[in-house]
Length: 221
Image (cartoon, rainbow, N blue to C red; front, side, top):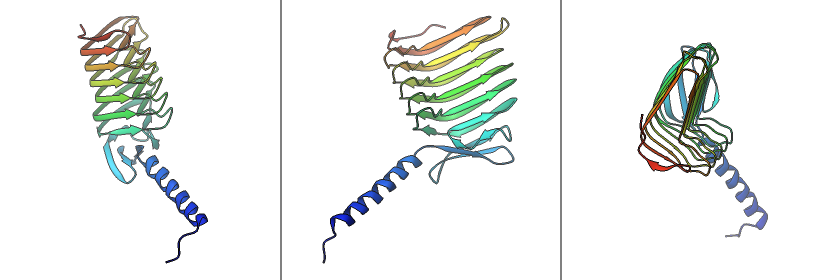
């Protein structure tokens, strides 16, 4: 049997590298929406999450991105992104945003939030299971609105530098900003656990809170 020449070995190695890169890229979740509002998210050819979001609101692409004047959605399953700047879930509305997910939201790139949500002139209500980020400058959950903003979660974990665990803000005197989570861990350098701000009232509660600024402790409401 004739040995393969070095040029042919080089070509095969290049093809293998391209195939490996393609497989790696497919590990990133891509979501799309049908006309009836149903959403399907896949890693390569495998469906990893599904649900329903306000029709004609989802931007097909990496992670779950949706915008609508009044945006509401429910998802079940896991969403993962690996690119820098690619949020796991990104939601925007003019008046109101409501979202529930059962499963894991995970990001691995820098500047990639686990979940971000905002409303220019209304409320935001977020209920999620587990959220994790590993890149620098990657907040776990960030939510802001003109009226009341509320976040509940099972757990949030951030390990990159300058990566806040949960940040919530309401910008009206009548608004309430609140966080209620089981566990929040932000262990990267310069990373706080919870930040809540409101011109009205605010509250924060976590059964367990760990941050690089405070260390582990039980949180008080």
